Image 1 (cartoon, rainbow, N blue to C red):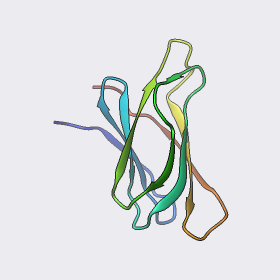
Image 2: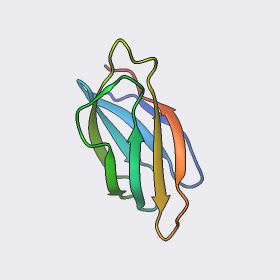
Image 3: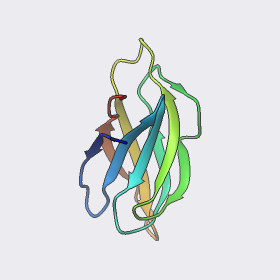
Image 4: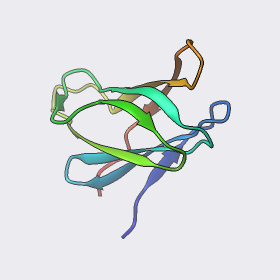
Length: 101
């Protein structure tokens, strides 16, 4: 089972997007800390079929979500926001969903 991964290091957190199957994607917390109040902002004109807000994601743990890109979606760009424990500042990362298949 081959999964394409796109990664970007941001401080000690490493969000990892991977395609699961169909319109399902996984977001993995590649950092060493639990991240809180995680939100995935989808591309414009996409259809969100599942929850995109996650109370927390543990280190090296994943959450899955279903996102349908439409012909009207201008791109595959997503934004992830989260907060470290005991911090009030929100961190963010802009990335691209991996292609299907």
